[in-house]
Length: 584
Image (tube, rainbow, N blue to C red; front, side, top):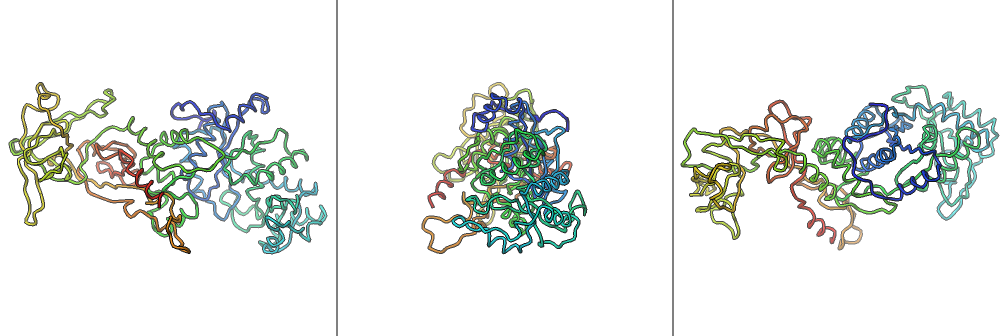
């Protein structure tokens, strides 16, 4: 990573106005930060990032990019029980994959543990923190409710010297977990429960993935995060709405430390925005863990899971995520975004960038009876219909071809324009053929279609345009194509709001989000592919004509034998179904 401010792999679209940009514009106008804009993306390394994190990443890094500032990638590793280096590595890879560069600004909360400890000591000396020795359940009982004030702890009046001594001994490992905690001393009668003397340090006898056994007291996130922002001189600390009730403590803590000379003003400003609510997925970490642990998906990188490593394996693109983040914008109000919006952003980017190839997913043999046996020739196909600079490739044509089974009907339905006895169609990039009949097995199933071709009808040759046909079929040569595994992925959940009650549900019926798992979320088939696809590299993306966008699996593909995952279909087939589900 370079040391310059964050950048994007491609130039970002012109930013849309929103309330966060308006706040930043006002700060720049008044000179509050001396023209600086510094944001941060602060994940806890206790799991894999999901689609909601992508919105936050694009927002924080995008703001820094657009205002010529910097965005810090900071790991809030204050909970050693759940954090691992594996997640650190995965998060770094995911943010980089999305196209963002944090330069020299890679930080860990654990690097600040000594400073955080000294901040806690400063609060104790100022009479704004104390060691509480109550059992946890008693502390909860005395906290009060939304309608009743809390009750002071009997240890709230401990002297500063006694608190300093106890806190030092907590750090030195003299006490067992749960015997003492350090609490901020604010107001047990505050209408905001987060200001009723919140716990800011607790004892944990757990090795940390970076600091080992050096510490046995750890700060809580709500205490650590504001201090991290202040240490790093963050200007705008942007987080989701669930932290709105925590903002008064954020401001109280930094003001108390600034009054004591620990930090200089102006202090970082916390700004909240609505998190991503996306249909047909679950973004709860608990539910994602359940899906993985119970085997409903094949792991954290399962292409159906809304993790960024799953999205990458499915063939979703960084450009598509950045377009999605720009398109949905940010607001203070919670709302639902249809999964189709994200999928359409992926289609939009892939339509522009993915080369075209041919695959037959449900093969039926077509025999061109008047074509020479054993003969073959090359047909030319454009790699991209709108980008001639990408050139052409050759597709071998022969007497026997694979076509899609749905492209033939012995007795055609009204409006059917493909192959049926007596009808003519063009074999895309090849010849016009006329269907002459079919072969059936003993059970009456069609096993092959017969046709005759017109030798002067080859695409791109003089006179070929004189043949006017309405059907156009894709195909793969039986002699030259090859079989490959194709994974047809679809949405993991069939209902837009997994587990939600439906109109008409019996009283007392409890639904689980697992009840709405889509049984058709993955189908594995063997398909016939044009020979050029043998050379596909892992993560190389294509449009399979008529079928959608596919990617060579980054894990299971091998040289000469790529496995393809369907990223998204050519059109959104879920819109009407989602509307029907929403009506119950």
